Image (tube, rainbow over all chains, first blue to last red; front, side, top):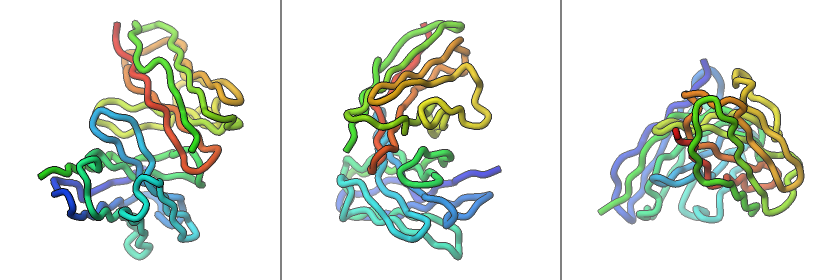
Length: 118
Length: 107
């Protein structure tokens, strides 16, 4: 069964940084367009970044400059590094798969909760 | 960015009811629209893409229609497991954007 598993969430301080990871099973990250989508508590879905199969990246304007999406083909993982953390970065972060970008997201992980608070 | 407006934001319905949700895009999106279901504490699940195409394994009581800027999501006979929040998402133009969600609650 194909699935995505995120990790790396927790409690972080404003101004700090974190790295989230996403590990797929049943397929390779390099074969798909891989995105991160976040959801603030009680709010809707917000797309934040995508890693294209060819290796390029694209970010939402709201996170440009603070978020870095990366891919490790040897370990078959996707990562999201977030710096200069803000309280408003709090939420559940999902990795999701697509066959292109822009496209529908056909497989999502269970999410990892990030809480930014002093 | 293309803005997606869903309505209503919430609704109450009974098992067996027909439920409809609308999604309006700020510009024409040529059927490049997906619908997702999200249950509390769970990840979103893709139900429909290209406005009306059912994702594999999704029950046929879910359907979608529309064109241009206006799209409709329908559950023909609401089942107990369908109580959830539903989101539309456009993928006509980058960045992909989501509607605000419609929470379907038990009446």
